[in-house]
Image 1: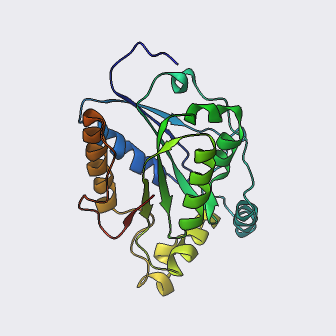
Image 2 (image 1 turned 90 degrees about the horizontal axis):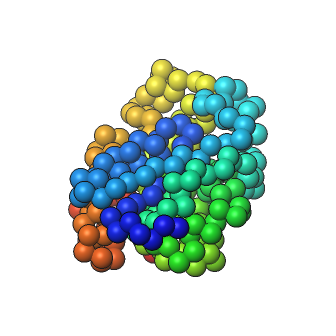
Length: 232
């Protein structure tokens, strides 16, 4: 990595299938940039494109079954920007059947995991609510690569279970749950809310300030709301 550039820089590596993680990281990046810190964004690209919605019930069941057993989804080679010097790497993506997504798992399995060695890393998780196993597995793996971990930033969809899982399943299968009368009283919004997206931007500001002061990133002391959870 190039050590000559002394400007504070952050790299966000992420995967997003439905766009929920993408929305969070774009606003998180905006908050960090507000502190005059450079942010590079790298989206993981599967070798074989995955469309959303998946289109059928069978494809959705098949995907949920395979991801439950942590199936890997091969990804394209990372761009050269990932090998430059950064003060922080944010690794972001959704929970798939309790686990990190297939592309994130492939990244951690590959030789690209050298990116995390002795590097300050902040995991960001977008999920319905079943994030705990995902978070534990991700942190264990990153610690194996000697990453210097910050607390995980977890954004949970605000819809209560079991409605959240049902809505995600129907959306993935190509249905429109907002048009199903039985679900209307339980389903107000797919994915993250505007408040959560704005919270991501505020957290970006806090992350930027901590980097400028060379301090630990402490998000628990901020005005976090119940849909955002921090874990070490």
